[in-house]
Image 1: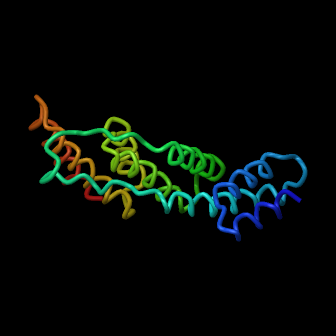
Image 2: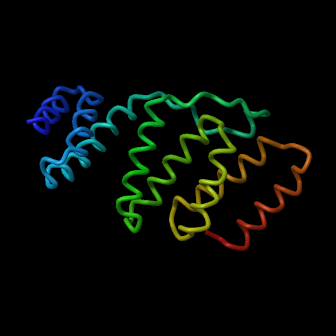
Length: 168
């Protein structure tokens, strides 16, 4: 019954409420089949919620001379946890690089570079032949350019060397 309530909420454009219901169904012990379906519906509903969140633009070294961290909306953090569940459930899925990139990109756009950097580096290292790795490399370079700092030239050289030698 809860599963169908979730669908009704989804079709009524009450996406967050639907996602919460699907989460309850997903973790209930009533039906394994409905639990798997609920996960898919939960992702779909939460994606609708996230699509309505106004994200800051990508950081631009021409416009951003300093790092101005912005708070991450709690719903995005919740969405990241959901994507983490998906990754854990099927780490060999072809969608994993996209999920990992999406999480890192949210931190990047909120200028939370210490959180974004290791995520982008992992994407670049592990999924080299994907478009996500290419963009991760570009973002790594952009972060160094915006951050500057005492060891700016050394860090810039290291990232540029990595991008040049690995060529993702």
